[in-house]
Image (cartoon, rainbow, N blue to C red; front, side):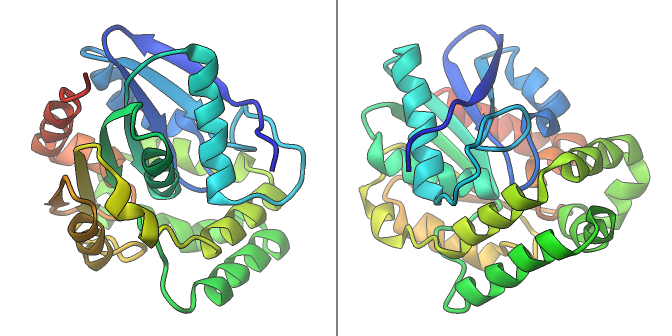
Length: 260
């Protein structure tokens, strides 16, 4: 599909690091995590196709199409090397991007993500797409919130949870449905062995959307990868761990220093 124009904001100064967000959310979810990274890097806050403030022509798309959008943004910016942080759907986009743009990706962090959702992926994600179209968005939160965060985090940081819920509620249901189908159609496993960027694969120990078994498979298939399982967090581990496990954020920042 033709590339779509992406909304982007740059904060901080230093070596550039792209931030790619999860399904049916936007770059607004990064909050304090992005601000912390911006003390050492130039952070590019990107809204993926149709999400947040980015454009979308209303047609179906794939994860590869979303990676092409980011590639076009890099072409326009004309930077030689960048780091990439992707979480959930954003991590899947990052994997495809790193395989096609190995000369540009200096290091990568992917969290709570996968290259393949299993043999039943098409059926499973078509069901999620149908739910996105047919169900009130407030009702979908009953499914999403426990997947995103542990109960303790929801109790300790309700304002962060509320902000992320607001982003989810603002997402176009049709866009959400097409993005679900894009994830169902994803099989990037053949690409993983071609990724040359040093890669940190992170996952919440309590993530049952993309569980640690998926993270282990990624880390085993990517040549220059290491695995970090973060205790006491679920699917939005980089948001949750920023508040509960600062050592995870420190490890991530150290890894991104490899960008050259």
